[in-house]
Amino acid sequence: MPKVFCSIVAPCWNEEQSLPELYRRISTILDQTGEPWELVLINDGSTDRTGEVMRQLRAEDPRVHFIEFARNFGHQIAVTAGMDYAQGQVVILIDADLQDPPELILEMIDKWRAGYQVVYAVRSERKGESWFKLLTANLFYRIIYRITDVNIPLDTGDFRLMDRQVVNQMKAMREHHRFIRGLTSWVGFKQTGVTYVREERFAGETKYPLRKMVRLAITAITGFSIFPLQLATWIGFIAAIASGLFIVFVIIARLFGDEAFFGQATTLIMVLFLGSIQLISLGIIGEYLGRIYDEVRARPLYVVKEAAGFESGTNTEPIQLDQPEKVNI
Image (cartoon, rainbow, N blue to C red; front, side):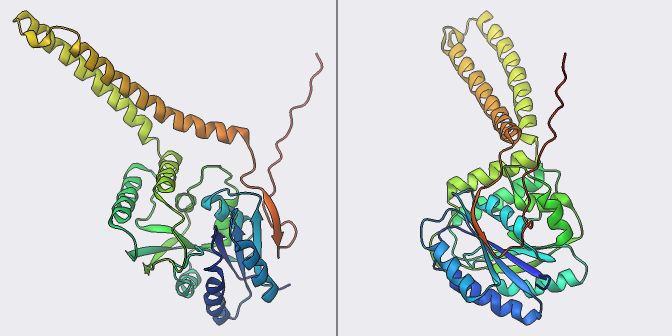
């Protein structure tokens, strides 16, 4: 089997309508390179005919490979599985909904040939999205850019090219709460961007509603910044100073007979205010603690029900930890 030059990794969740068009456009583009390629499709627990369409595409073209999860593990985990199994010298991540144009792949490959090891796609325009999603997306990218130590490019998604050396480094990081574009920036290497217009979905509905967007934002912030913990500390100091000043103010007011500060209303308000700050701070600590708990359990990132088209040993096997020797006392 010839060595694969380019692997296209596309996570899929209920994308039966988009897959044939995705394959057609990718095969048309990559055939122009004259190099061997593969399309790695990951079925992330779809409930429609996505799995059947994958098998049909593979029957028609053996360059189509697929991974089928035992259940839904999420978009970022599906992308991780695709990188684990991809065999190419370069690996390109792309969503199956065709909002990210496969035609940009040739430009990415040109950048790679020029010496760049990561080529990310920058969205200059996002068609078919509501003003609320555009506003929250812009706000998220700028917040994460400000509060993290990692230089995550603005207005980028997971659509990107990575050199094999970068992919190998990504495969070594097995954290459960994953933010792929942040991890790609964290590993470093020579990176550049290409600009494009993001189109509307080819078919179906968005797979990232508000709930999932918020969850991804929390994962990104907690995975690359301790700013929320620092913020909780600062809020505590500010609340303590404000409470001290308010106590002094109330004592002075009562000495001068101001009846507005007699009774329990002021005390109740202050208790509720400080209690809410404590609960928020505990919630922030809980987010980080929960992520530590997930890592300590060391469960596999995903469970594969079926995989087709890969050489044996191409995926990342679970890490076997050395067991401590038993000591007789």
